[in-house]
Length: 206
Figure 1 (cartoon, one colour):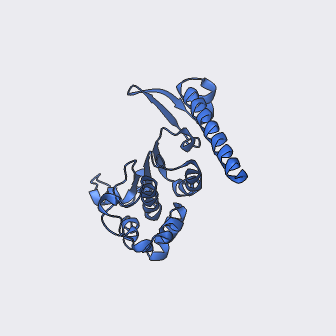
Figure 2: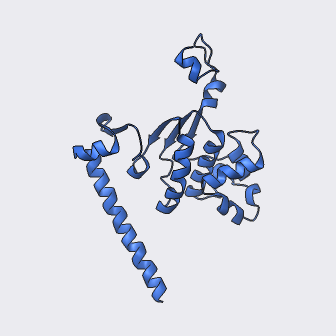
Figure 3: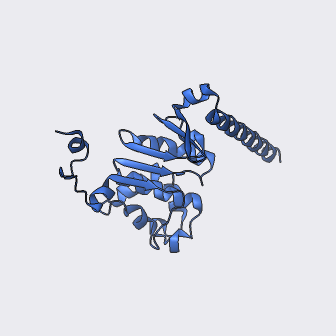
């Protein structure tokens, strides 16, 4: 058995690939998520239309959106509006993540998948994303470097060219572009954390 036949059994041996078969293997979470003018439940279930309500809700829990959905007047039957305009950017991204988790594809593309999320929500989702990406080919496009520290291979692109490549620890040791970006983002994160702590302290004292 050839490797291609082992990992992609539905592909024909004569290399003829149907578009439907190819789509079934790939799950995408884009930066600008577009939702259908339908319910939240339908939008999540779109990736696997045979999924039960329980499976849809489990995917939403993994994407850290379940509780927020239950707070809405119609719950999972809430209409999201044209292109999902009734939801915030972060909520739309979490619905898209839930959709991909439900699909369980073999190849996953995360294009700035957590760019609209706050740091805490991102942390909540990372564990679920790590689980769904296990034993699957995953391509991550990211400016927020905290989302790719566990990648097997990181490619640093500068002016359209690959400037550096390696694992997180290796790139930090090189002291190049990646290391500079990491230090800058960590400094920004520390500043934001200090500000949040100060605000919480002030609120407590009032």
